[in-house]
Amino acid sequence: MLTVNFDPFPVIPTERLLLRKISDNDANELFFIRSDKRTMKYLDRPVAKTVDDAMELIGRITGDLTNNNGITWAITLKDDPKLAGTIGYWRIDKPNHRAEIGYMIHPGLQGKGLMQEAMSAVIDYGFSVMKIHSIEANVNPANEASIGILEKNDFVREAYYKENYYFDGQFLDTLIYSRLALKK
Image 1 (cartoon, one colour):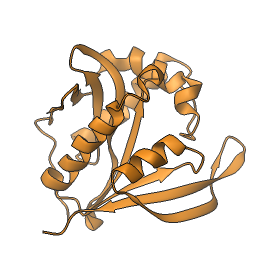
Image 2 (cartoon, one colour; image 1 turned 180 degrees about the horizontal axis):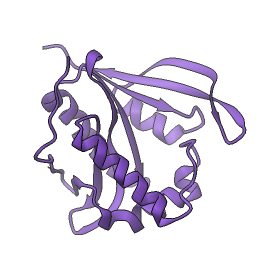
Image 3 (cartoon, rainbow, N blue to C red; image 1 turned 135 degrees about the vertical axis):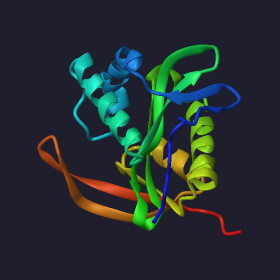
């Protein structure tokens, strides 16, 4: 059984970013990102309607962190502590040493290589510190940007599920990507 402990919270610096713990102070920025139709287009989750929706999400993230069932980082620019996005392992399958990665970034910061920078650091943390065996990503097949960044990070497509997910009055398809830890 995989054992993880996120106390103290692992802050991860990269060249341009600081990946830090999400707090209640991030609610307004998280609300903006989660209410933006461009950002939420392929996430197949309800769009945030109020800051309280963001606070509820922060509460779930904090609960998962406290129970060592998930970890989500706030993505910030090194010169700006304001939340610019999120990335993390929101579902950790401890018996199988597997974690599901999820990520999103402010629409004004897309296409600048920031998510690639964050993803590379979080993948490294997952394999080297958490000691997970594999990372999974569930993707809407129309989300070409997400598929591109996964493939750039050596994820491979494992499955294409037809109409396996019901959201907003329709059945949607899902792609499953994964990456295995490198064997030593």
